[in-house]
Image (cartoon, protein in one colour):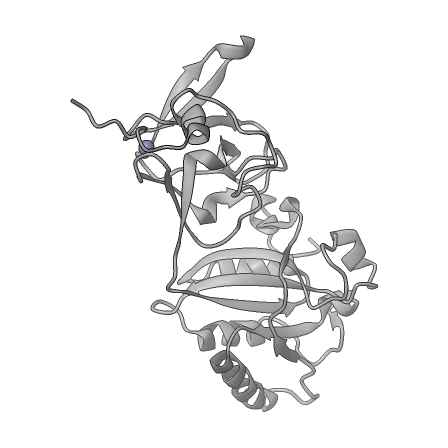
Length: 280
Ligand SMILES: [Zn+2]
């Protein structure tokens, strides 16, 4: 007899996984969740999605643009009077949601629309965080995303005076937030020093509130450190870097604050739009 993976589920979980129900949009615990880790099947623990494929589609359910290879079965679903593709866990056949394409929200142009109740999050504890602001966050993200050992990048706003700022508010220069890239990196593969060196080498830290043509406090050079060790390393490296510049480095070094993830269209912007750098 095959194992009944649905036996220990709550009635709410069973409604989704076994009876192919759908949770109410914008209510699931993972809808606005962008931490590094893996999402496993809530019924059988089968690993389904890496968190670096998760994005905010605005649909109200967790969205992923790729699956872990071989983890998911795709079925044609004709219910509801239209043709859709249902996705189920390959191991226990539990219902996850549906998959859509043609919306062009991410590079892969795929949206796995998944119920939070079908999945469970397991964090990657060994990853460390780093946060940098060095002008337009599009190109800063592209730089770090391409760096070996960097697992996850998100662009957003930090260091301002208001809660939940929008891009327009930040661009108005009135909120004092900096455009930043929030990075999760594997310390066994890349060091904080290496990330710092990339940060210094790819912007001008001596121009106050300006990078090239981009001017305003949102473009300021800034390092948000996440622990004492990072703070010490930044202070040391700024001394080293000063030798390379005639003018004084004006980079701000302060403790990390609340990270507000930017609107989805800003995430991975240059790669998504096949652009080399900002302003082209
Ligand atoms: Zn499963």
